[in-house]
Amino acid sequence: MSQVRLSDLDAAAKDVQMAQQAALVAEALSTPGQAADEAQARLVPIYARKAAESCVQALQRLENMGAHLTGITGQPAPTVPLHLLDTLATRILLAALEVATVAAEAVDRERGNTVNFSETLEGMALGLRTEIFGPVDLRQE
Image (cartoon, rainbow, N blue to C red):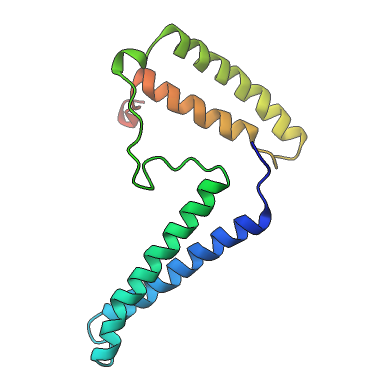
């Protein structure tokens, strides 16, 4: 994976901040009794559109930096046939990820928990575990 430039990350963060600010203004102007006049009320869709545009820009920047945004940007999430969710290869991968997570925790500790390899691997293992065994019912644990 290529190196992410901090300037690109900062730009995406600014896009998100702009979206948040525009959404807050639109919300305030649309609250009954908050809009001073009709002219202010007409600003609501303009600020809402600015919020949406800023979100799209942020998502595009994040995607350009390598973020996997399937399902967020309107693309349908890829589907895996049910019979391929629980296979020998999937279970071997799950076991390998669980072992790798333990090793990654040691690396993270050595490096002062600044890398978080274990968190990434643990997330991948959780996804596979859910595919194989289904969601955990916390009421039964």
